[in-house]
Image 1: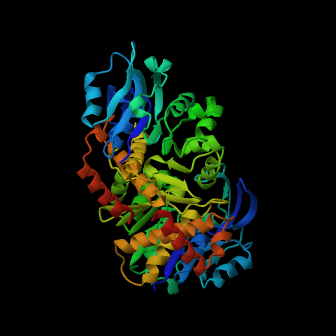
Image 2: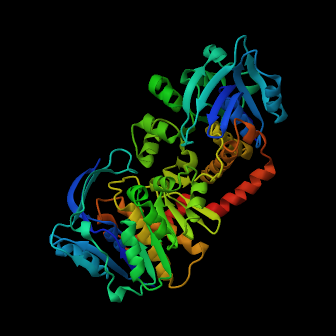
Image 3: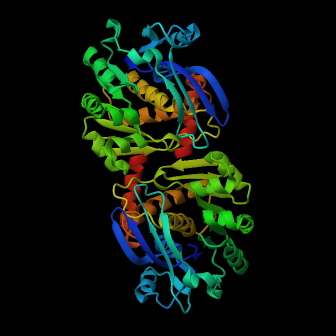
Length: 300
Length: 300
């Protein structure tokens, strides 16, 4: 069982969906990721919060045995995002982003984290992702996420990160933007040529498409009748995906990668069933096992 | 092995995709459907063409043992559609539609066709679909397709057809339009309440979602690296789907329905690999068997 280091955002979200509005609820890629991955293996978090960050939100991660010694507290306000979803739950509309203390964030990896064998670079500035990779000591598996904003504005830095990682987790629209290619098979091949050993394309309610060793593997998402809030689904996917691989405590092969994708998909289906982190925070190992069974029926 | 009666359009298409333009090539839902379904079972076609319809296009269906005695020839020009696809191959942009002889089409079912146990009502005016159902003699399985235009303009007639059929084949956007519901699980339930025993939602490159006996089943499409022309993919899906069920020559159960969807998906993957009907017209049983194997690897 390997530990995972995650570096990402920690923040407060205000989210409106057809089911209502929630103001200032816990969010951030590092939180969704940690709550998912900690179902499998110990997780170490690096991020930054302001002095308004609530003790109960530290306790939530600690209750899942997540190591939050790397969560810096800085004078100021915590990162805040406001967004809404309309009918199409695959696309968030950003209403406002306040970087706050995240604006001057420099990831500082505690000594106790530097030997972490698995590293997840959540969707942050590729310059910061590079700083993380300079501080860690030869991890066995590095995965990253990114977004349209960095693809447009920091492409050169992003390309440097891509050369240093093993797995690119990216959503379909962003993969197309990264490669300027619409067809998913061709786009994956082009992304592989940029460095990663595997590309995992997140397709929201349509599931995922993975490409590894010149073969692809594709499965639908677990169908959820009541999608309340899709925020964090991608980070939850990453948490289930890397959590499964890290838990193996050894090298991974094609079959492991497939199973990891399925775990990512199924955990994401819990996240979208409630606002914010409520869905993923409440999942038990038994519920996950039940959903794995239900999923096998749906795709058998 | 049961015969299938299909009633649909037969026409000439002019299609532009990123791979080029083809002018006046064979098209129409009945042609795509027949070429696919005839790989499994005998097919009988009802449609209308003008006196410009080429003998080689009758011969193409005849070479696949399709019974075209129900293809009326009327003085005038054959139905013609012009469309293009840009990057997103899931959506056609219609440039022109000339109904021509199709404008006054009244489906007349030949005596030899009336006892056909399986009926496919391709995407035509629901008033005509009702006329077909009045002429056939208690088929065991009736499936239908429709489109946004009929959902908007002929809703009352469409609802009458829905009460008389077994399987609704519909694409995702049109299902949402029919039910005014975005979520696919809920939309399927609402569509079921309108009459059909099963709903099969076609999702283009994302595959299909099927709903039957209060359970759903979902699989991705076979990934195609080079999508040349997606025209007819939905009718090809219907042909593979009903062809498989008709070939069984007995009642169908949940497992049959799943297998039928897989056949539909895989045949559609041949159609999109070439312009017009070229892809589906060239498929051999051996190629289909190979693709079934390849698909099992991709989703295993």
